[in-house]
Amino acid sequence: MKSFKTLVCVTSFALCFGAASMAGAATISPAGAAFTTAAGGTITVKSPSSFGAAVTCNISFTGAVNAAGTGASINSAAVSGSNPLCNLPTMTNLPWVLTPPATGISPGTATNVGYKIAGSPPVIPATNCGPTTIAITLANTAGGLSVGASGQSLAGGCTVQTLGVVAPGITVNP
Image: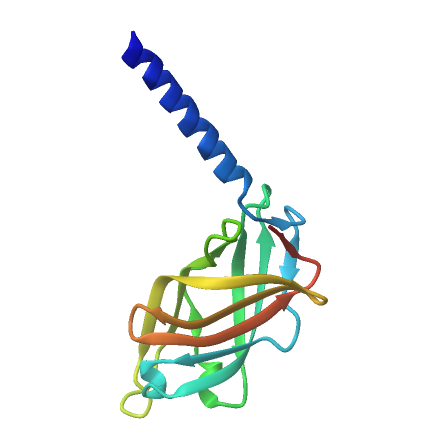
């Protein structure tokens, strides 16, 4: 009987601790809202197609916050810029899923991140990077939700050196 009472107490504690942990998770709002990131977003990547050199391009995302506000999806990404490599990537594994951090514990994540460049050997080697889960930062700014990343390796020999975009009208709630 004593071990049964101990089991009930331990189980109750675990359930309460788990519920408290879930209650502390950050959310993104407004729930269900669609978004397009503002002009001026940039990404700097290294890839086999650039022979490992850093290439900076403009980037914009379209997506939506899920109905519960527990995350968001990136449904499309457009890359452009003055470097000829900026016009070659095809984004793969969409939608990419953004998950906010647990309050004060860790960065958020973006899952399924990947892209391909067909290349034209030997001038431009092909690139096939991802799918990979990367660490992201989410912060509220005057312009909206800032999404950033730095120093994130992707499977296939690519690195996201920096990423910076802002989604107007969207916020993270710690």
